[in-house]
Amino acid sequence: MTTAARPTWAPAKGGQEQGGTRMFGPSQKFSSRDLASHTTLKSRKEGQDTQDELRKRNLREELEDRERKHFSSKDRFYTDERERRRSTAGSVPYLESGGARREEEKLAIKNIDADDSDVELKSDSDESDEEEEDDDEDETAALLAELERIKKERAEEKLRRERQKQEEELKSKEVELVRGNPLLNPNFTVKRRWDDDVVFKNQARGEPKVAKRFINDTIRNDFHRKFLNKYMK
Image 1: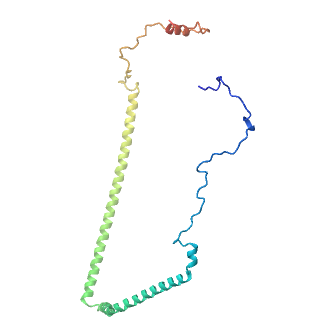
Image 2: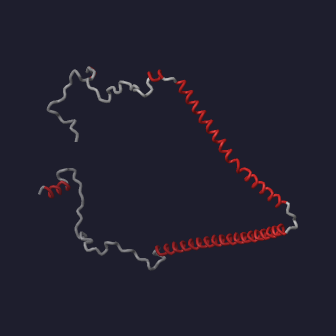
Image 3: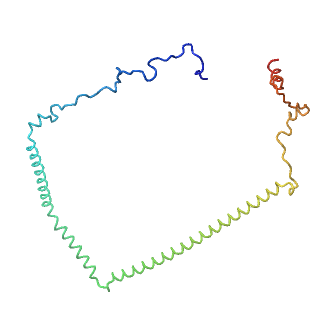
């Protein structure tokens, strides 16, 4: 419940500061977050490349010294690589001889006559391989045909089951409709209510019903009299 409409002991009074005539002055309070922080810059200390240290250093000599060290290390790497190659040069003839031997073997295989037994054996093995490949292809084709036949039988069986299921559902619906119609079902009986055999049912059957009347008077109407008899008597 609001208290805006209730009277107060000391009502509010307007003054000179009310409205737009109030004068505002600068506030003397500041937040700690509004205060200035880090007002001074950090300066480098000794050993951190200060301006005096940079003036005393000769940057050109340092750069030349670094370049000299770099190129000297590079030359040392190349010399070490040359020495390593020279030390491993003794094994090259052995590798070359092995490669030459393999080339000679390849040429000898190419120069074999067609009448040799090795060539005949090779041709026989090729023919046997071709026959095996033909047998594998025939087996694969037979397996694929068998797979297609199994798939077709399963699809037909699925369609037959679905059709049978639909027919059973239609028959069950027809039976339910026949049973629900009292004209077609001689054994049709109305279900009993849950309160047919209750002990306290129809207790007020013999009591007379009081007719309601309308009286255009809030003191003499039936509701007012009933209220008085119930709460004021």
